[in-house]
Structures are given as structure tokens and as C-alpha cells.
Amino acid sequence: KLIDQHYYAIASKATILPPSELNVPSDKFEKQFGLTWEAALAAGNVYNAMEGCAVLGITADEMDTQWGICKKAKKLVKFGGGFYCGLIEIEGKPSVYVFNGFFMSMRAKFTVPGESIYYYVVEWDSTACSWADFRGQVLGPTDPAEAPEGSLRGMIMARWQELGLAAEPNVGDNGVHASASPFEALAERLNWLGADLEADGFGSALLNAGIPEKMISMWTVDPQVQLLDGAKGSLFDALEDMDAADCMAKCKALTRGNVDSMYLQDGPEAQKIAEVIPYFPFKGIPRFYDIGGFLKEPEVFQMIVDIFVDRYKALDIDSICGLDARGFVLGPPIALGMKKPFFMMRKPGKMPNTIQSASYDVEYGKREGMCMPRDAIKEGERVLVIDDLVATGGTLSSAIELVKMAGGVVVECACIVELKFLIPSRVELYKKLNISDVPIWALISEEVLNNEAELGAEYKDDGEEH
Image (tube, rainbow, N blue to C red; front, side, top):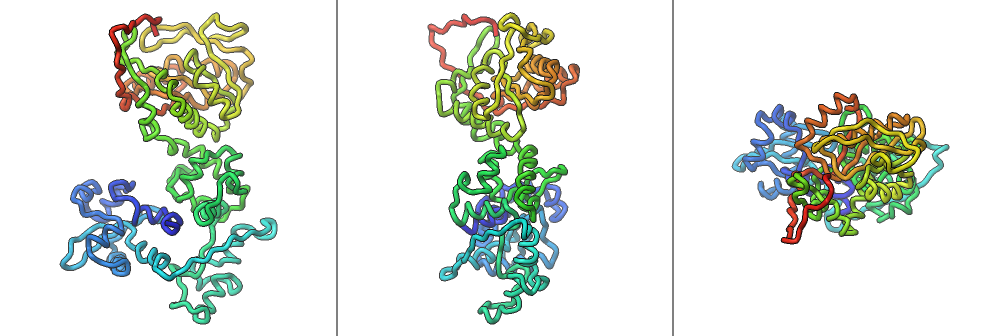
């Protein structure tokens, strides 16, 4: 388990995940092998390395040999860092596509009974030795033949027979591994030492910088992330050779560009929350979604607050605005979790000394403008707007107008529920109002809200029109 976690980016494709759960670039697969990824998957002849060994009835070393054969025959494609697929063709056996076939042999070197892994925790003065010099001069390059004589890999290369090694070190077996960055070092301490994130020096610094624990945990397995230039690539590669301060700053910048990866709309967390949000007819609306459902479930309510805090604490929010009236329920606990000020936007006449937006349209009629205190925000402040549900976006458009009137910037409008079937009309409205640049995010869509309320004979539709 330690090895599989250590090499998770490779191991996940080789031993952990089935091919159907892998994010295979279809265009690269088809270009290399001449058939679509969907067709290969449907045919049932794609396997991870562990499955491939079982199907073909071969050992890890035999798979490694076959991997070398398919690589030499140019029947192998690289999808990304630590992500390969090869066509394994053995006479008398079915031809199969295998992911990361090299890993089984590589893994066996660490897991064979009787072998041991030795690891060390080292510290040094960063003013005396940069991380790049630690790797280049103290550790030595990946290819030990190019390593300086005084480096660890250089010394192992020069003395491999004296040290009792079975073969001369090479790029694949170069004698010693070391962390490539402060973040990779953190990931390895968490894995090998069972370190506590909050107690770890670099871990606590990342948390204090506003990087969510969930994001840090996701990153410890070196996923493909959205890089600062817009491309996708290895997280570990993006942080390689950086000293602690620069590494932490880049982690924060990468967090901003990857917040969507933490909680997917209609993902596992959303589906759990959707179970306690009922719907029922209300004043002509056939499916009125009632957030009162999760307010009755403290654990679910806390989960929602935690999700919103995780998403927004790394986005440099200055203040949080809640819309009348459900935003008053959601906004304060989120603001407390982020330690940010909260202010209300209300219907006209409910507060003194306010500024008011123009009237606006909603999916079921027209409404007066929203109001907010004149002194709620300062020029240039970054505001998060919170409501329970977004439909056509009329109410949110009024909030965006008000924040702009006050000189602020709306970072995002956040809702629990989004009615996706109304997105086209919302997009059209926001183009007309010239606010298309303001993003809208919601955790749940109507596609997973299937909890129809059981209404008794005593039920009365006696509320005000919504």
C-alpha cells in the first residue's frame, strides 16, 4: 500500500482503477491504435497491468518484457505523466491493451518478501542550499551516469558492486529517490511517516494560506491539474525544484484554477445532499425545492457549509453577501468558516441608509430592485454572493448590479441548486446586462433532485407567491 500510494499516479492506472474509470484521451488512443477508445472498451480487451497479467497468465517480469517488445514495435502511446497504454500481442493469446504494464515489475522490486525499504527525513538551511541544488548536486540527476561524483547517485554509481547491487544503476534503478519539491516531500511524509497535515510545518503553512485540506489530499497522489498557462499536467512536475515560499505561492495560484475539481456538480457529495431536499408544488411552481430539508439535518447542513468554505477560502474573498431571505441562512455560517464579514441584500424598505438596484425579472414575474447598506463594501473589494437557488438569474443579476454600484467586484455567485434547463435564458439575460463575466456556481442541479415530498391531506399551499 505504501508503494502504491507513493507511485499513485502510475499505480492507479496499473493496479487500482479499472480502465472504464480512467480519463483516457480518445483522440490519442485512436491515433495510435486505429480504433476509438469507446470501441476498445466495449470490446472488453482493455486492462490495467494487474488484470492484464491475470488474463494473459503471465508474471510481472513477463509483462515487463512484453511491454518492452510493444514499446520497440511502437505500439505504445503516452497520454501524460505516468500514463501509458500498450498493445500486448503474444502468440496463442488474445491481443489486449494494457495500461502501465511496466509497473508490475517495478512494484515487485519493492514488495517481494524479504526486501526492505530504507527512508530518511532530512532537513537543511534553504539559504545555504536551494531545492534545485539539493536534487542536482546532493542527490544527482535521474540518470546516474550523469551524476556528479560527490552526489548520492554518483557515489552509488561508482561503488555499486562494492555495495552489493545486482546490476549497474540506470535511469530506472538509480539507487535512491528523493522528494522533488517541498510539496512532494509533504506528500511522502504523510504517506511514509503517517504525518499529521496540521502538525507538519509545510502542511500547516498551506492550510494557513487558504488551501483546503481536501485539495492538498487530492494533490498528494500527483494528479493532472489545470496549469497556470491553461494546459493540463502533473502537479508534482509543476512544483519541481521550487523552494518553500515559491512552492507555496504556486500552490495557492494552482488552487484558484482547480477549485472545480474538488466538488463536482451532482457529484457524490451533491447526491447525498439531494436526498434531503424535497420538492412539491407551490404557487404555480410544480417543483419547488425546499432547503428546509437539509436544515433539519445538521450533518448535511455542516457538509454544505464545509464545501462552500473549501471552495472559496482560496479565492481571496473580502466579504460575503446573502440574498433575501435564504441567503441569510446560508451566508453567515459560511462567512464564519472563512472568517470574513457578511452583509445582507434585502427587499426595499427593510433597512435604512441603502442603495437600490433597478427592478428585475424572475422566472415567475417582475420584482423591485434589491437594497444593501451604503457602507457594506469598499471600492475594489471582492464579494461572494450567496443564494439558495439560481433559475433565470434575475435576483443574482440585481445583486451583481448593486455590488458594482458600490465599487466592488463579484468573484462568483454561489448557490446550492441550479436549474440547468434555464441556463440558456440566464446566459441571454447576462449578455443583455453585460455581466456575462461573472461566474455562477452551484453544487446540485435538478437532475439529481428526485425526492418528491409526501404531502398529507392537511397540506395547504398558503404561503406568499415566491
